[in-house]
Length: 494
Ligand SMILES: Cc1cc2nc3c(=O)[nH]c(=O)nc-3n(C[C@H](O)[C@H](O)[C@H](O)COP(=O)(O)OP(=O)(O)OC[C@H]3O[C@@H](n4cnc5c(N)ncnc54)[C@H](O)[C@@H]3O)c2cc1C
Image (cartoon, rainbow, N blue to C red):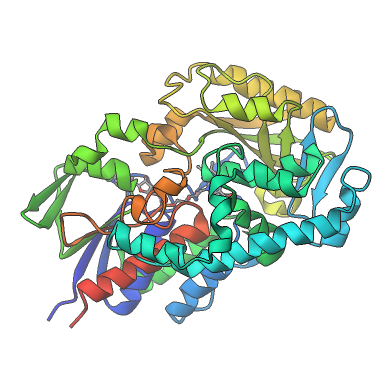
């Protein structure tokens, strides 16, 4: 009897991890990808001798990658590199550049004269964050839910002492532990990854400070993040997984409770026993399955994560005043956070993140040069649909960065690419350009998030940022495990 066939829409990390798990079990997998290469947001850009990571530049919870490759009995096909320091933070108006170390003794030195008794306060704060991480990891994150009731019952087993955290914000929790603005600002940056600001993110997410500062820290990949994709592809090939590139799925055909086929932009039809969608799980349901809960009007009312405005520049010369991972912030944190996601105009004095991969990977820039990846969180296209002013924002950021690191970047640019939220939307079908997919407020996690199992079609599943458990590289890898569990349970191989 032939193996069960699975068609996967999209070749992002969630898809690749799912394809690995399924193909090593014996499922016959075919991936359809609209782009000309695999990886989705985890992608690579090569231009004029420079190589850039397009999206993710580091990740937490590296052990999820080990779990993935252990589960298929293969050695991990890329080399992980722990970040130390984790990152640096520059705050406008201050001469100090904060190096954020995992080692609290060293970190205390950074905040000397700014936060009295920092180490003791940080240990107390991180103890609470650690408890909530370990008390929720298996009850909320690494679990499939079939109903809201089942999810709430699982939540009810989380120790009651964490309850007040549901009613405080991330920032309020920080205020209970620290006095200085600097510490509060720096510790709250991680909240932006969830799609909101520290002023409206629940304090349960302080657990992310534990993941970065104590638990597993941050990691990247030797030779660039795309090595993850390059490491996975030969394993898929070995297992006979077929990938069809430059092909976009544009419609779905279904019969009662079964998805029968998908059709691409050339009219070609793909039939299989099972389907997994790695395109945005909320958007796909509205666009191709016409689900009333996911119309554009309803999607617009959901909370979406920040939209990326990204700049990739190759620079002639070595820039001493900058490190591998850097945040550049202004001096109006609260005002900026309160308005940035709602503003219909180009941000003035923008806050941004800069990754300089050439600091640790000489191969990604010609000799004597640096490659800079700049990420500026901006409003998504629900709020600011028109990005024809992209050059103005790009120039403003490049000038600001040049001044702050004391290097004439503007006049030493050898190559430059800018992606606006409009580009991100077009490239990977990201809803209105939201970079990380659906946000993670308490009403959009667990059973409240679009499920990884379709509500009506019994052979359709989802993996990736906007389904469970959520966004980020290790989290979509967890998502692939949750999908495998469902498929093996509901459609086992005979
Ligand atoms: C700028 C930026 C920076 C980031 N930085 C980090 C970071 O530092 N660390 C971290 O952990 N995470 C980071 N993230 C988040 C991380 O990239 C995502 O959470 C993760 O890559 C999402 O993977 P996914 O499985 O959802 O697939 P995606 O990457 O969304 O891939 C889905 C694929 O499906 C394809 N597709 C969509 N629709 C169709 C269709 N109809 N037909 C065919 N193909 C289709 C797309 O082209 C795409 O290739 C960042 C994201 C962005 C945008």
